[in-house]
Length: 212
Image (tube, rainbow, N blue to C red):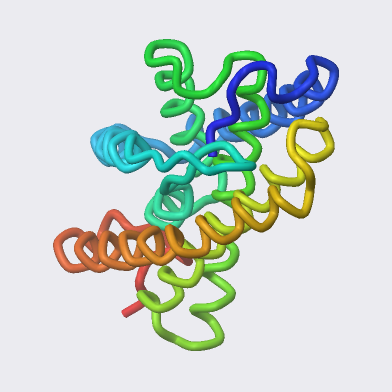
């Protein structure tokens, strides 16, 4: 799902950068207010884990690449959609600047797709679904799947607007691949939440945490 440089015209890329910077500023405000010293190791572990799962890339014809994202997990565990933005921004900066995975000029679009959309869909999807069905782990699975799938669909739309790929082919390929990959994303989100809730329920934030 990492968009490379030159896949989006510079004018459009700047628009995504402006949107991304707004959310990055809000994420930094969240970090200053909510991320105490006790949470720094958890953020580091989440960032490292997300970096690792994103390294498993599948090239997608008429698309970019297929892989897991992890924004929903970060948002759910840390209790805020801005946590997803914060962690994914850190991961994407390291990937783009040091490892060349994803472009620099289009990094704003990548942050919007994976961090903003992934984080907000993951967090609010989780809280809404858990409220309805009462099962935190099923809610985490569905929210993890939805956060990945919707991010991929948005990426396909952006590439179509940019004139890089036809919309129908982009939606078909990105949607199909990520609908399947999303099952793994949802599973990892649910399992990780279960393991954290079992070992350290005190670090899970309300309302994202598992209620007693």
